[in-house]
Length: 170
Image (tube, rainbow, N blue to C red; front, side):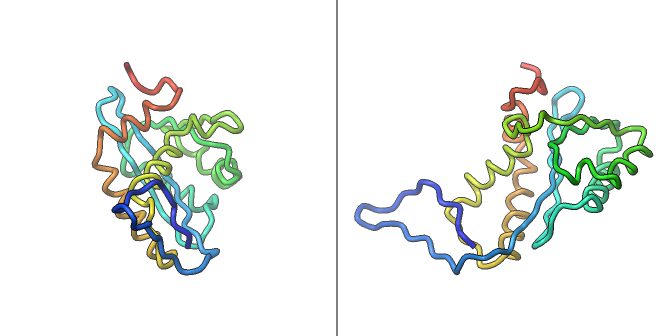
């Protein structure tokens, strides 16, 4: 698996070397939700990682069930236009939910999605210049660093407020 290469430093005359195995076609798929309390005091991060699997409608429904058990309040979910988000199984499940409301981002607008900023933050900071041995190693590291990010309220709020959406009070 190739490392996410970012600028780094080394003592003068010693070029940093990033070792990697060979290219791998294994992957880690992720689904996440950033929550914001009604009075903008607390941000939350909920996520699920899947080694060598795609995000399917069944996984989305499972994630939303789990999210509903943890949040237990009415939710407005704003998400991108992934095919699985618009799948029949997801729509059918959402029709039976009275406290979940859905809105979609414009067709291609990753700059509006705060969850994309979470993944960018992790790739640019915690996981930068590190080469995993395999997909399981990457999953473990992503789970660890995402779990650490959950406890950083200032960073989570900045990821939400950094979007051009009107999600934060200034």
